[in-house]
Image (cartoon, rainbow, N blue to C red):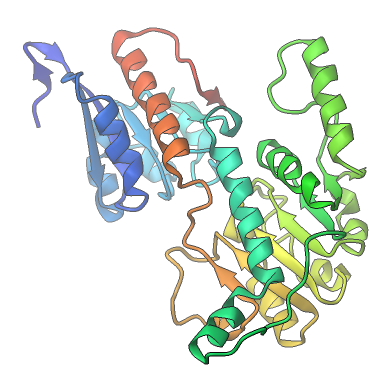
Length: 343
């Protein structure tokens, strides 16, 4: 591996693993006119042996613990191609002087893409997409009998960038929106009080009933559809558990476009079997890639997509530009822009 181009140092960018290939492909395409930036992808199992050769690491779905990070002796920045950083030991990186960052979802189209996927899953479950495919194969007409989104109450758990984008898309369907947020004092990255006031006014028009995290069980009892948009933290792991699902209306739908670890697998299966849960639509799973033989797929009212909510050309090209620009900034030694540092 060459360390210089025309006697000038190379800045190396590492993408962890083969999944989400458009991320590294679009980044490489964006940087193709800059020969002093090298973009590689390394198999997940080989990352610990190679991470020491790189200056910028894009984690994707790799878990970077303190052991792996300790080998990153040239690393300047670890970042996610998106918003979630739960797999990165931020404290270990901080101790070693390595910056950690995420890409703001509202600035790249990622939030809008995820919100659209939530709509897709909601409508697919309401109109019984799996059963429609069976009817097509069996040459039946007028079956199954579906439901409308009109008039439903939707509970958005986690009213950040994705939650707000989802609420904007849902409102024209004629739904009632209830939502929780740990703190309603701030919304997104609003720079000045006037903008904050404007943002709060927008939120007030979107949300019919607001609550905090402690209100999730009460709000779940009102909802026809629950959409998980929460970040995965120590406090939110398994938050959608047996108690939460039993608090939901019988027949309500559960949608997860955030992180698989928010849902307790056994609780979900139990409530599908008892038919208390009316349907499950998930873009993220407990283990990824998802096991195609998992028994949860036996249910007709389950829709699973392969972690593609944010995987659109618009969002990936936008995020690739952010990663490319940050690589150029690291190479030039200039301040980092376009990302949200967490340490």
